[in-house]
Length: 83
Image (spheres, rainbow, N blue to C red):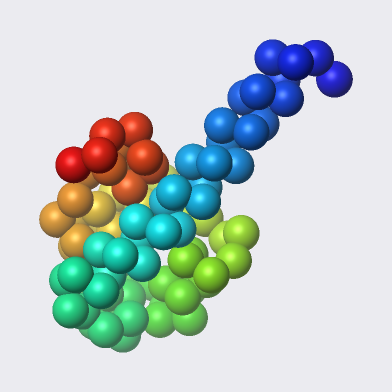
């Protein structure tokens, strides 16, 4: 494997970890329960939990609805911006 591929793989893994941390933080800040957030996003409460506790990542349309429901930018949740 080339260094470039390894670097990209590391960045993606790092981005996934940032996503999980920021998602959990924003859920807490929103004071929404997993049930309330799940209803807004259109997934099960268990799926919301999986997004911040496992390697499960939301589909793009679900990700967009998460951002809207939590009132945060996609760039922020992915760690591309710090605000």
